[in-house]
Image 1: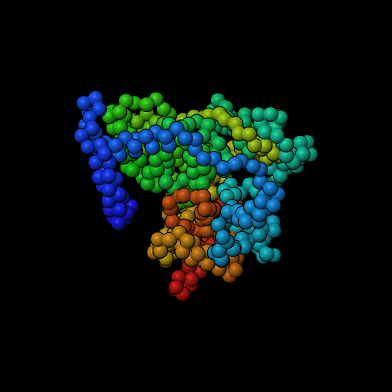
Image 2: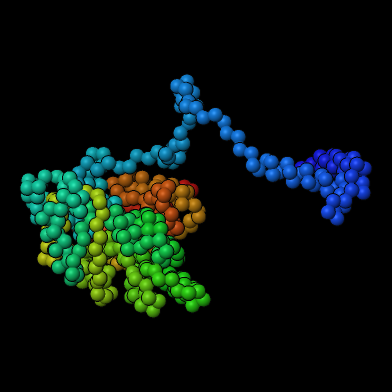
Length: 452
């Protein structure tokens, strides 16, 4: 309220009080002396009481006419479901014209493929192809239903039994899609009020599961066990300060991180979870069939017993021919331990060779078949680094016939790690091909960076 208006109201009140003082001068009712002030205050109280008991004004309700509805529809501008497409978003990814083996066809040209997670080189394996053909003839393509209703087929149960036997667990659950597994399992175990401590570098599927769980989520610095312990200690101190709430508590990590290729120190994780009474969820998407003497994953690599859990999601179950393929792949892995030896030899060869590339640094673990290269001199911007790395990858494909990929981040992805070039090593890669990759990466990276 302006000062001028306030002064005007005060003057009006003073004049009103002065006008009422004379008529009521000397008036006494029940021993109370009346003057202008008391009369004005009584009038104000009466007005307020009157207004409080009045019905609020409501405009007359009537249905909108057809003309008004059409006008509102014409004026309505819906918000876009996706932000405006920028030039950087308009990309044309390479299109494969053959299977995603160690060599594939892109735009009519044969290239060395390091963009597919074909770690054991089993794409196109004769036994697996034969098993898929037989399953297609018997079951058709899809299951046409979720597991909990009418989508469970005998081959699904056979696959679950084969997996649990291979891993030495009481049972296993078969999900229809790898990325959907963590998005479904985490909310199945964790609810509102539970506590989850997760690595800040986990992939989007885990991030989505954390969000859907509605739990209290705390992130620790990527693969930093000291940072993890600091958070665990903070929670333990809070429990002592406040009455402890009964809730479930989990540490969520990846065995081999999709976004960095780093190996989680599971032995340290287990020690911390025992000390602070937490449970552990480990995503072994990139370590199953890769780590350990017999390919049983990170737990075998560290010599830690594996625990199992159960859960179903309501999406259509895995196509039967893929379940048959998984059974056969485990059979092949058990029969051919040399696949693991060959894979690690190839990983070591590529890892050592790429460690000498000027301008890039290898961020992944020396045992990881997912090799990740990052810029030595990062701009600090994921977008800028991605554009530069994409230019390198494009030159690799156009000039050197090498198919690589740059780590991508969707608008929903909140992981904190820098962009990098991903190379997926396969047991089926020839050593001559990997030596060519090393030499080509060195020359192309130096050429591109020298132009900047």
